Length: 126
Image (cartoon, rainbow, N blue to C red; front, side, top):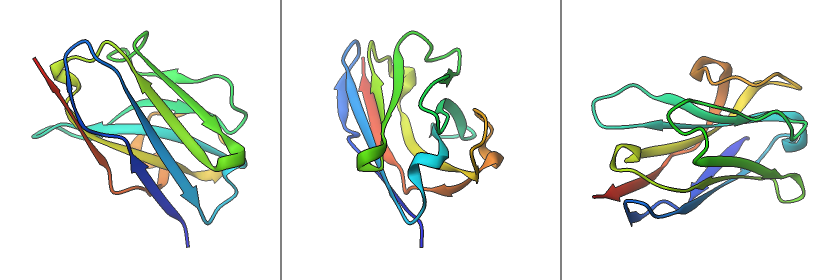
């Protein structure tokens, strides 16, 4: 059984930083592309960052490019999202997800991901 658990979300002031973590069990973490997604109230879930199973070639949505960085530590089955220069519009529930196939390319499409966490709330105050 695959389990995906996010942590690290909290209330932060605009301009601040946060680091989210995502721990995965039940699959071969080192062989799966991982993604970060977010969903703001009244909006659809969107892909913001992904990192292939190789650990290189991260992709970012334009809304976070240059501010967020995704990384992984395969020995700990953990994915990270370093978020800097946070803005109020970054407020959302942040989800981590594992791609539906092993050894896949980068993708920010939600339907390419099969295993999802429960999400962690990030709130950025102005």
